[in-house]
Amino acid sequence: QVQLVDSGGGLVQAGGSLRLSCAVSGRTFSTLIMGWFRQAPGKEREFVAGMTWNGGSRDYADSMKGRFAIFRPNNKNTVYLQANNLTPEDTAIYYCAAQGLGYISTHDLDYNYWGQGTQVTVSS
Image (tube, rainbow, N blue to C red):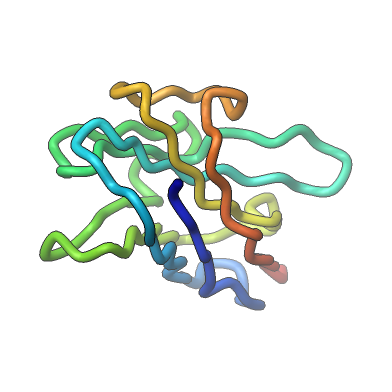
């Protein structure tokens, strides 16, 4: 079992930045894949970013490339999502997720561990 607790959301003005955190506990293993998803009101949950547990591989949704970064510094059990140059379209609940398939999937159904979500609101 893997437990995830995400945090760091809040209210930010357009053009601002936030760093979301995902504290990982329980059983971690080399094939663990970490991901961030988001869900805006009235929309389906969408992939934001993903990485292998060892940090050797990362993937981003096209609209996030260059603005968002997923990372796990110093082999700690915390995964971060740095979100820069935010726009009102980035307003959503952001979820940390994990799965053990060994490859970065962009499909939320492939992830079987989820954080509780953290709200990000970007004002214009």
